[in-house]
Amino acid sequence: MPRKKAAWTVMVYLAGDNNLSTECLFALTEMKKAAPGDQINVLAQFDPRDEYVPTHRYEINRNGSGSTLFDDIIDTAKFDSKSREVRFQNESDNAVALARTAAAFNVPVVVSTSASRVYSGPLLPAIQDALLAAGAALLQAGGLLAVAPLLKTVIKKMKARFQNRQGPPLLQGYYDLAKLLRKERVRSEVASWVYVAGPRVYFAAAVAATTLVPVLFPVAPLEAAGGILLLVGTLALGRFALATAALDTGSPFGGMGASRDMTIAALAEPALMLGLFASALAAGSMNLGELVRTLVQQGINRHPADILAFAGLFVIVIAETGRIPVDNPATHLELTMIHEAMVLEYAGPDLALVEWASAVKEVLYLTLLVDLFMPVGIAISAAPVAVLVAIVAWGAKVFVLAITVTVVESTNAKLRLFRVPELVSISLGLGFLALAIRFL
Image 1 (cartoon, helix red, strand yellow):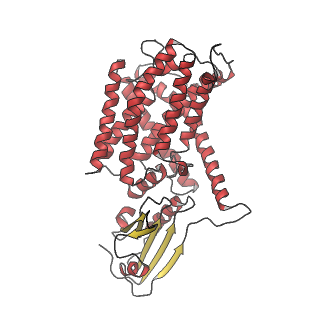
Image 2: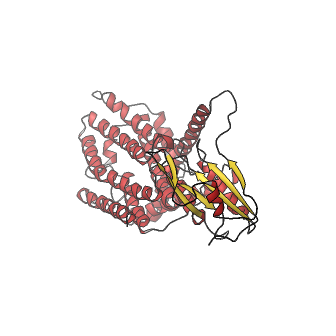
Image 3: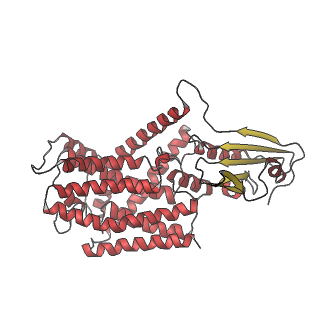
């Protein structure tokens, strides 16, 4: 219920252009923490940067200070692509009508706070934004590249503990990469440039994908470049390059591994997209940054579709990262190899790029699950404390998922090759169900 007539009404306008949607959400959160009280009504309008995400109008703490931002929404507007106008659902399409929704004894105080970046310096604002996005992309990609070998070793060590073994030291992943990078390249005489380009394209695709997924903040460094389709397409490009390179040498193992990997990918990639679409449908955007920002704003929603989508995407994580019961990353038996068969011809720095990219993809998939289904602890400001909390929260959530992956690997046997499509088909079915329930 709206509050009683107050002494003052303060109206705030927040524009999320120039990549400042995160700052706008932070400002709304700070307004709630300020707890205006019964004598002041605070009305805020937030226009996100993405024109396909609804514009919301809020009456701050209309249901008490314990409510969420989602509970404070009093009106919603969507962008009409034909008329190029933003139209609200209720009467509050103008400032006068909006003021009536929270009437006060005194004349409303209108505060116009566009969050657009203030121009300063010789560079144009667009160039400044591009440089900031490039810097953020480098920092995020570098951070995930640094963490990826550690996560892979942690999973190996936990698996060893399940088997009553000591396991490798935590820095073993870094030692292995350093050893491979120091070795001499060994290449087949009949290999062409396709064989040489395979690991490099695979590694570049994994690194590029890291810039499309939010990690510590509800914004991806290069989210303006594309959303879910670009992410899935970038990862598919790396897979295609590695499979083509495996065929280039004419090795029977490479061809067998590439054939098996493409068979699994034919089901895994559609299942991945369906799971992501189910989450995107709830947020109203296929942009991962906007999707995470909406989840942060609305809070954790235990909708049945989310549970089904999480289960389906978790199976895909197992399949895409080559984990048991789909594949065994520690085997070299020709009858069971999938990913290992494709890279059997590589050695030295080429093999290091492949192994490093595989570790990055594993971190990326776990981060994707964390973003979509556990958006807790994400920093909504650049304050040092908020960033530190976000780092700890992200590490804890990824570690919990790593434990789950370890338990699944340690308690299941590897499936026969012809049973693997059945498992991946279950994920595809879960994705269809999650998408269908969203429409109910």
